[in-house]
Amino acid sequence: MMFTLIFALLFSGMFFLLDILQKKVFTGRAWSRKATHVLSGLLVIPMPEYLGRGQIIFLAGCFLLLLLVSRWKQILSIHEVDRFTIGEILYPISIGILALMCLPEDPAAFRVSTLLLAFSDGFAGIFGELLNFKPIKLGKNTKSIGGSLTFLLTSLGILLIFHGFSVDTIVLYSAVAIGLTLLEFFMIYGFDNLTVPVASALVELYLLG
Image (tube, rainbow, N blue to C red; front, side, top):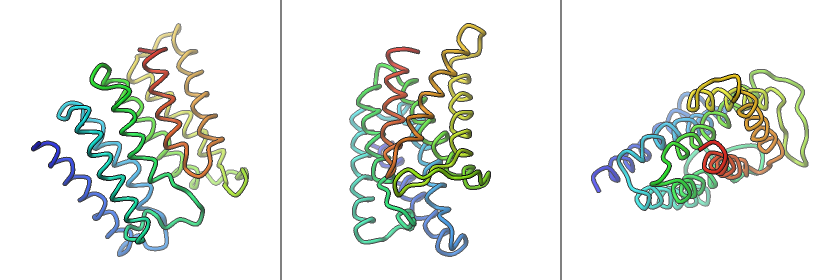
């Protein structure tokens, strides 16, 4: 119970601190959304060491409710984007699904999938804008080649760090990273926040585990 409260306070503090920074310091940019994406993953990764599966799902549900209310009432700045997306809503849903799929049997699969969600997807959004390659339109959404390259390299790096490097496995890890990159590329409205971690968890559990 104590660790559940600690993580709840850490998440709440992160949300509102980043929101204050967005409104007072980084005005005019969707900075808080990207920072929340990455930092949330950093807070989620150690959870299996301290919380059971049910507690993680409970916390994910609580923050899903918080984000739904915030989106409805326009409380937090993470909802302020110039396109339609429900990515921030799908994020806690993904964490709950990962806990249900992976825990307590395979915490490593939970962590790898969370890292891919937080860093591969998060860095793709950040560096996709910085690299400024020609964007590609998918319906009313825009995808960045620079973002996809960032996603690919970050995903491959995460897989190599967790599973180790060898000549025999580099082709397999590269294929997994390419597959996840293509999945992320064709997802719109923020659904990559759901499909990428769930797909990576399935790969971890049934192919790489």
